[in-house]
Length: 457
Image (cartoon, rainbow, N blue to C red; front, side):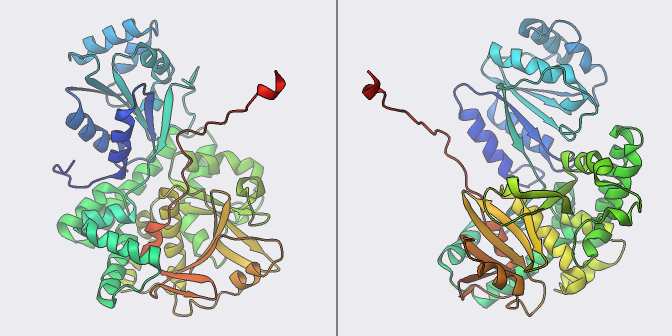
């Protein structure tokens, strides 16, 4: 899909896999605004279908009328062809329902359209998790959900002309725990610094690739932040708008605190977690923020150990976080200054990459041991991750203490730092940029389990 935009997305590979399925469901692509959902779907439709039909329920003001009457497939398809004035060829047509959250009936109708089977359907939306318009009946069993994020670091490298063979070489170093040659290591660090500043919003990345002008990058990021604020004003309910806006605007300062933990009392001295829960969830469901909950103990299953009253709240895109800081942090980062005042931005980038790689992120903090930046579950194993911004990356008292606790087992203890690849005292030290190689365990497509009942006969 190397068209005018020239940004290849991993989501394109997901679309290819989906198309190969013999009896496919509708693919529902979720994610924040401006991350490139529509662009990649359009390109895929043009590349792999004879006919591509697109309905946007926000820009096409009357499109909702297609779904006002009977929701049987024949009625909908007749109305759809009349509205779009396009011929729809069975088995060779892809239909995109964009911003589908604005038309709940269309979401309900997906079940009947998939059962009909004549055409392939993709739904996408930026506020699908935000229930500002209720869906009467979700098409359970007829949708395949796919969460999309801003461009990750590997996609950013592709956009900047780094060859896949170079990335594979680095992956081999990661897998074999071998040193990266210094010249390559230094260049990768520079690319990593630029990614922290630019982030992964596709239009922003394209601006950087075309101009390398950071002032244009920041201007574009500022526009996106304002767009997010407008979404909050338009789609959040009543009094929640004020709470959501306050939370969103306070993310940079909350992360800048030494503990990084979100402290509600700094927003509202009389605030209660329960009263603000829906507001935090709104930002997470919109894909704008990434919550990271503390766990009772760093042992599986992590989700059953989560303490929802203790959490960090990261920005969905690190470039947007830099732009939201209202300080000239970009110059320092581009020059490799990731010391204490930049530690929160570095940690945000790691959270963003871990989410893109398929991990559910948690952290662990206790008075006895101290804090571990990230705790992730990979299969049934637990991996501890420390993110170090300074030169003293081999000092990690919390990691040392936790590894000594009896009956706690860990697959791997990792420190991401400015140094090169090294293993010491069973701790893996990796350069920051190698976070892109940490991938989450994927369950097999088929898990057949049969019991021999012959003994019961």
